[in-house]
Length: 97
Image (cartoon, rainbow, N blue to C red):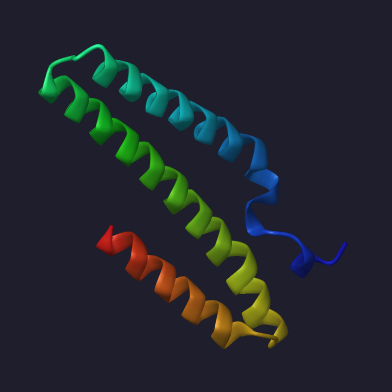
C-alpha cells in the first residue's frame, strides 16, 4: 500500500479508538447524571472534561494529518497546496469550537 493510500492516524488507530470509546462512556455518564438530576455544576464539570478529551483527539488527528498527509503531499509535489488548505480550515474550525 502506498503511503498516500491510508490516513495519517493509521499507526495510532487503536489509541484513537480507545480515546473515543472513553469519550462515549463520558457521554453516557452525562446522560445518567441528567437522568439522576445531579447538581448542575457537577454536570458542567463533566462536560468540560469531555470537551477537553474531544479536543485532545482532534489535536492528535491534526498532528498526524500534518506529519503524514501534508508532509507527504508537499514532499511528492502532489496535492500539497490542497492539503495545507484543508489543514488550515480544520485548525480554524477547532479554534472556533
